[in-house]
Image (tube, rainbow, N blue to C red):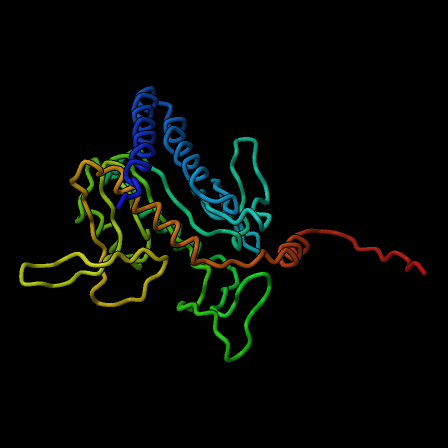
Length: 294
């Protein structure tokens, strides 16, 4: 029986991104750090745009909640293109998305650098978003288009809310990465984020089920959802692929994780009335009654 050549598909994408990383090194050496960041971010967002259905919009910038709080900037924001996802786009392409329309956020780095504490900074930004910004939870009995099932009816969803945010990081290379440093960076944080880290030279960091055998620990199923039930045998693990498809393997795991998350996530449209009320609440204005027409 023929097999779908999934590694060949993502090998081509990984090669494009790794070639872009080479450009990063050249531009970074000239001192143009801002442009060097774009060299990897832009092709990664272009790849996502090619690979994801048209209902998803891939952009970058900030997230705004109904109280008009503005998040730090994210290199990648995946949003619902059917829910008026962009509130504003600046001249430099920076976009502002209503929180309710966001599925996932990501950070793109050319290489891992211990001293820069990249994962810690990214996770702090994600946790600030989840803790300090407001959006209504989408309950498990919501089935879309404004329809919520009544008492005693179930949609079959196993999670308490359907609009968890997935967070991910992509690195062009491992560089000086080691597991002890990552554990130290994330030790004071809750451990959920980033949900997955992809290194384009063939490594993935995510949660997985570890099974204790007589020979030691054996890797079980990966926990790729935005939020997994906390159980003792799920741990953050680093998986280094050693075959000829190493780069393609790490990218494939990331992409399939995104596909799974997007297919399982249900969003509601932004409450634009609440956005308007926040605008009025923060503005000086005069309201004049216009004579009723009869």
